[in-house]
Length: 196
Image 1 (cartoon, helix red, strand yellow):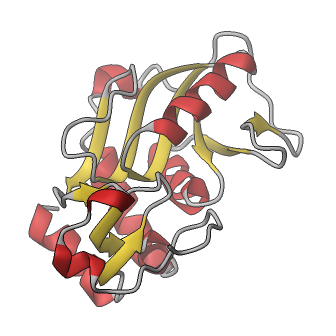
Image 2: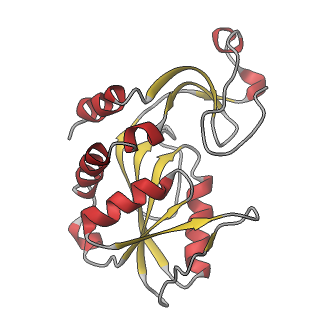
Image 3: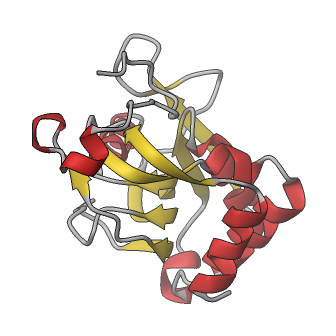
């Protein structure tokens, strides 16, 4: 699946939004990929995960025994990647603000894990999830995401395989270009915050 085919999937799902968006990182952007919409169709989610699984080198895939994703946005993407790789899929969540494996999920000491995200912007959530996997005894040996919108700046500390790189400028709230500042901000992601 090439980049245009991936974007066509997002457009077909009405998941490529334009406006003024507050990202989970707090940064602002004029474009937003609503992965929840693209993943709501199981056949589309499976196609995207299958395409992404082909980007992960075999020398990494043969070591993996689980997929872990951060809740909330990564849950479906992680589940579909687990299906594509034939592995169990789990998720970490943060009911008290710090990621943990819960719900009876567990990792064996040294178990090799693929971290699966929907979108990576700064990499902060991914690094937090990687730390949670380590604290649970596992070892993240690679990460993957449907979208890398970090403009090449996200360092996850492990090999990172995105399905598509979307280089869209992001801005601090106090450094918006005039055309973006003129549009009311909305926060479409999974972390609640007041629009400012």
